[in-house]
Amino acid sequence: MSGVPAVRISIESACEKHVQEVGLDGSETYMQPLSMSQNLARLAQRIDFSQGSSGSEEDEPTAGSGGREWAGDDEEEEGLVKFQPSLWPWDSVRNNLRSALTEMCVLYDVLSIVKDKKFMTLDPVVQDPLPQKQNPQVLQLISKKKSLAGAAQILLKGADRLTKSVAESQENKRQRDFNSELLRLRQHWKLRKVGDKILGDLSYKSAGSLFPHHGTFEVIKNTDIDLDKKIPEDYCPLDVQIPSDLEGSAYIKVSIQKQAPDIGDLGTVNLFKRPLVKPKPGLQLSISLCHSSDDKKSQRSASEKQSPEDHLYVLEHNLHQMIREFHKQTLSSNVMPHPASAPFGHKRMRLAGPQAFDKNEINSLQSSEGLLEKIIKQAKHIFLRSRTARTIDSLASRIEDPQIQAHWSNINDVYESSVKVLITSQGYEQICKSIQLQLNIGVEQIRVVHRDGRVITLSHQEQELQDFLLSQMSQHQVHAVQQLAKVMGWHVLSFSNHMGLGPVESIGNASAITVASPNGDYAISVRNGPESGSKIMVQFPRCQCKELPKSDVLQDGKWNYLRGPFKEVQWNKMEGRNFVYKMELLMAALTPCS
Image 1 (cartoon, rainbow, N blue to C red):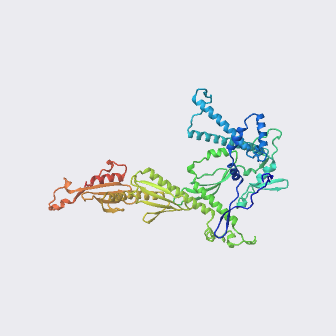
Image 2 (tube, rainbow, N blue to C red):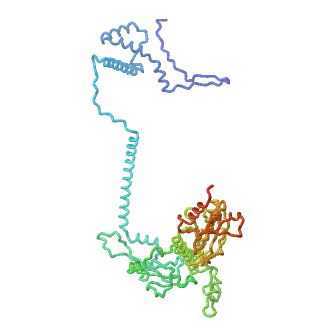
Image 3 (cartoon, helix red, strand yellow):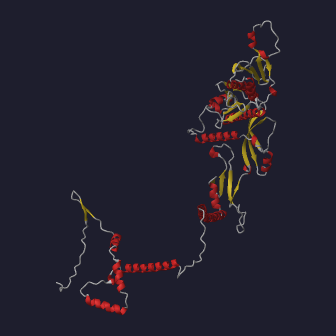
C-alpha cells in the first residue's frame, strides 16, 4: 500500500448547526455559528510559535549551503507533505512577532548594560520645563474665559450685522417718496380724493362728536426742496395744510375755582359755570374751551404753568372714563327707523314758549343723568375728598400725641371714596386700638362708621370733620388709660365718654376715668377734653395725709383706712414721650412692691 500514490480528499464542514441541547419535550437547541472575530481568535490560538522559530534557526546558514541542504532534503523526503511558508496565511503575523521579539531582546540587553554603568551611560536630554500644576479653579476660569471670548465674538458679529441692517433701514427711510408717506398717513387719518385734491378729516364725528366744524385739511406734494442737493433728515415729501382756526391746540379745561368778575382770556370760551357747594359761597365749577396758537404757545405755557398739586389727576381720569362711556353709548345705541318729520317723544319737548316743558318736567322724563350732571357730581366728590385729606393731614402734623394715621383705599367709586383713620399712641399700638374709624366720602356728605358699628353722618363742612376728629382723639387718651390699667393690674372704678362735671367744652364732651391700685391704697382720676386738655388727680391713703384735721364725728379707727382727698399732678413736668408713657410711669410708681 505504500507504493500507491496518495489521494487528496477535500473535507468540508456541514452547513447544519451543531446541537447544543435536547429538551425533554424533544426540542433541540442549536449553537450559534461563530462570528468573524471569534473565528479569527480561534485560529490564532492554534499557532505554534516555537515550531516556526526552530525552523528559522535552521535557515540561518549561507545561501549556498542552505541551497544544498534544501536540495538534499527534497531528495530524501519526496513523498512527505512539506511546509510552504509562502502559502501560510499567518506568515506576516509570525514575522512581525519575531521582529518585535528581537527588538525587545535588544532593549533588554541595553537596559541591563546601562544599569551597571560600566560600559554605557545615559545623559538627559534638555527639554522645556514642564508647567506647574495649576489650581482647578484657575483651569475652570481659563475655560470660562475661552468660552466667553467665543460667545463675545458671536455677539460682535451679530451686532455688526444689526448695525448694518439699521443703517440700511435708515437710509431707506430717508429715501421716502410721496406715495409711501401718503399710505402711512392713511393709517392714522381718514383721507378721500375730491377731484384733483386729497382731503382729510380732523373731526371726531365718527366717535360721536357734535362739534360743528368740518375739520378738513388738504394734502399736497412738497416741492420746496431741491432734490439735487443733500436731502435733510427731517425732509417729508408731502405737506399738510390745516385751516387757520384749527392751528395750535384746543382742549377742555375743568377747574374748581373761586368766583371772580373775570372777563376771561380771548382764547378761552367759558362753556359752563355753576356754583359747586351751596353753603360755601364763592366756589364754582368752570368748564372752558381753551385754544392756543403756535406763536402764543411758549407765552401761554409760561403764564399758565401750574404746580402738580393744583392738578387733580383723579378727576381727570374719571372725566376721561365718563366721556369714553358716553361715546360708547352714542355709537352702540340702536336708533329705530322713524320719519324725520315726526320723531319719537312727547310733542311738548319740541315746543318753545309757555307751553313747553320746564327743567323739572324734562328731568323727570329722562331715564338717566346727563353728562353735565355727572361731571358736577364728580367735581363735588373730588373737592370733598381733597378737603378731607387736607384736614386729616393738618391734624396729623399739628398734634403729635396721639398720632393719627390715614389709609386710603385704592379701589374707589367715581362718586364715593373710603379712608380708614387710626388713632394710636407711639409705642403702645398693640394695646391702644380702641379708636378705628371708617370714613366713606360721598358727594355732599361723609359717613363715619365706628368700630362698634355706630354710624355718624357729617356734612361737607371742614370744621365739622375737624371737631369730630379732635373729640375722638380726646376720647382715645381715656380709652388708652383703661387698656393700660388692665395690663398693669389696676381696677377700673368708673368710666364715661361724656362727662357732665367740670367746664363745658365747646367741641364735643370731656371724658373721664377713675382707676385704683391693685391693693386699693391709691386711686387715679383722669379727665380729658378736646379744648381743656388733660387733668390728672391722685388720691393717697388717709394715713399718709398729715394735713387732715381731726374730726369729732369719725371716732372709730376703721375710717382711717379710707383714702384721703385728691391732689393734682403737675403733668407738664413729668418725664415721658407721650401721655400713655407718663401714665405708665405714674402707675408703676404707685403700685406696691410685692
